[in-house]
Each structure stands twice: as structure tokens, then as C-alpha cells.
Amino acid sequence: GAAELGPYRHYMQKEIFEQPRAIADTLEGVQGIVPELFGDGAHRVFKEIDSVLILACGTSYYAGCTAKYWLESIAQIPTQVEVASEYRYRDSVPNPKTLVVTITQSGETADTLAALKHARSLGMKHTLTVCNVATSAMVRECSLAYITRAGVEIGVASTKAFTTQLAGLFLLTLMLAKTRGRLSEDAEAGHLKALRHLPVALQAVLALEPQVMAWAEEFARKENALFLGRGLHYPVALEGALKLKEISYIHAEAYPAGELKHGPLALVTSAMPVVTVAPHDALLEKLKSNLQEVRARGGELFVFADADTRIESSEGVHVIRMPEHYGALSPLLHVVPLQLLAYHTACARGTDVDKPRNLAKSVTVE
Ligand code: G6P
Image (cartoon, rainbow, N blue to C red; front, side):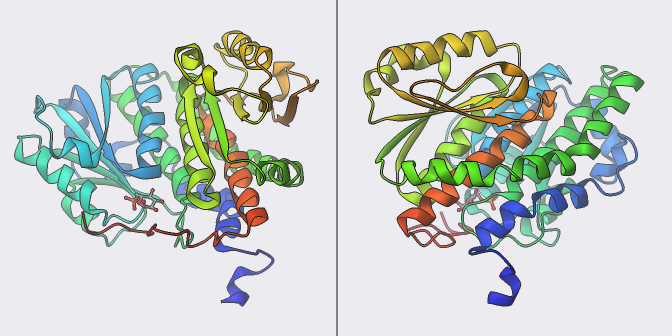
């Protein structure tokens, strides 16, 4: 009811603003990276596995795509990510030494549950879920779990569940890195410090809301949008596009910026806003030249740029400045303004933000 919403217009907005609290709760009690965080017998399982297979749907799938970058770079463990509804029906080559990781807010998504059972039927018995509901079917089905503490999520478009999943998946990455002798004490301390600082860093990003609202006014008049990201932030671009289409009904697509020249550049005109996730990482210079390609075709850029990128506003280039680059955890910050952009664009278009047409919060049938 209205009382529960407090100062917010919709549950989605409230849930976006709950993220600092949700992350703090999800990390509560994490003193160090130890197997017990994931349940009984985790140590033995982590010792035995040589790869990871992530299965999920929707926004949870994009959390998995982000985790793949972490798992392969920080833990150096081969990782596959698959949409659950595809995996369950295709022939694949099982590896009994794989850790099967499901990611699900509800723990009740039919395709994800069926994909888990399919993996198990192929002889993969090591299963772990990153899930927001401790009493769910998925938690009962998996031998290991990391329970996120986002709290009840009401908005159909997932927000706080996504960032808390990322926090859980980052802990899993650190755990697997440590098990494999790839995490020094210093690195562990550094990552834990960055995790603990996330609530404060998220507050700073939430303070960008008025600037994002100004952009949303423009977006509300568009029918298409392109989202670009590279590397670790490509899944963030995918998630930004998904949020926009789900609740504002604007057609949105995401591309890794290096793929522009292989198709989407043909769509770029002044009528196509191009949203860009621009962290100050190793790919920044490449990304800048991708942005030139868009500008050269008259495309209008809306860039979320880390403070230290030196990407400046100019004709056809709008910039919202993010905090300093946040390293490996940067996706948790960069996704927030994209959630806000989708939210305020949908508000400006007058859609039913918390209950978008044709979509359900939890898809418990195939
Ligand atoms: C539905 C929801 C999405 C969610 C997806 C997966 O499509 O609308 O927000 O990401 O299901 O749900 P799960 O509970 O498995 O994370």
C-alpha cells in the first residue's frame, strides 16, 4: 500500500533506492572468504570442480554473464553461461567436475529448475544456487547456496535482486580463486574492503537521479535505443536495454561496442539515442573510437562515464559523470543509472511501471 511506498512513486523506484541496504544485508557477517558461506560440504566441492556452468533466465542470466568475466579473470576457472530454457533442451557435453550454478531471484522459475534437473540427470552433481528466497524450491534442490538478502522484490523488472546476485557471485569468484591458490591475502583484503564500501558508493550513484530524469524526458519520445558496453560492462548494457524495453516499451538492443561495425551502425541516425557504459578500464580507448563511429553518423550519445575517463560533453554527446572507476565491482554501480533511466522514461510515458504488460514477476510455468 501507499504507506509502504514511503516517498516513492512505485515499488521499482523504492527497490532501486534500497540497493545500498540490500547489498549491506547480503554481505552482512562476511568476515573473510570461507567455504562455510556457501553451506555444508562446500570446501570438498570447490576442491573437486574444474569448471562452472551458470544457468538462469532474464535479469538473473545477465548477472551470470557478468560473473563469467570475474570467474575467468579472477579465479581463472573456465565458465559457461546459458539461458536455462535453451540448455534444458539441447544436447551438451557434460563434465562431472563442473559446478552447476543457478541464479534466481524467486527460486521458482520453471525453466531454471528444469535446467538444473537436466544438468543433474547428465551426471553433474555439484550444484549451487544464488537465490533470494531461502525457502524456495531451488534452494531445496541445490546442495549449496548463497542466499541474497535483497528482501521482497515487488516490481516485475528486477533491480535490487540483480545487484545482490552480483555481490553473491563476486564472493563465489573470490572463494574459487582462493581454493585454486589464486587469491593473495592482500587481494582478499582489498576486495573485501571494496565490497564493504559498496553501499556508500551506491548512494553516490543514486544521487545522479535528477540528471538521469532530464535524459528520460528525451528518451520518452523515442521508439528505439541502442546500448553499448564492452567487456565486463557488456552484460550491464544488456541489462540496461532489457530494463528499458520491459517497462517503457521502447525497443532497445545492446551490443558490445566492437560489434557496431558488423550491423548496428546501419541503424544509427540522429533519431537513435546511443546509451554508453563507459568505465575507466582497459577498453576505454577502444570504446572512445567506437563512439567516434557513432558521432560520425549523426548518432546522439548518452554516456555514463567514470569521473576519470576525460570524456566530455559536446555537440551530440551528453555525459553523466559517475564516481571514480570502481574496478572489478564497477558493474554494480554502472547498472544503477540504467535502472533509473528505464524507470523515469517509463514514468514519463505513463506505463504501469511495476506491472508491465504481458510480463510476470515469477514464471513458474514453461
Ligand atoms: C521474470 C522476471 C524477471 C526475472 C526473470 C527470472 O522474467 O520478470 O525480472 O529476471 O523472471 O526470474 P528469477 O526469479 O529466476 O530470477
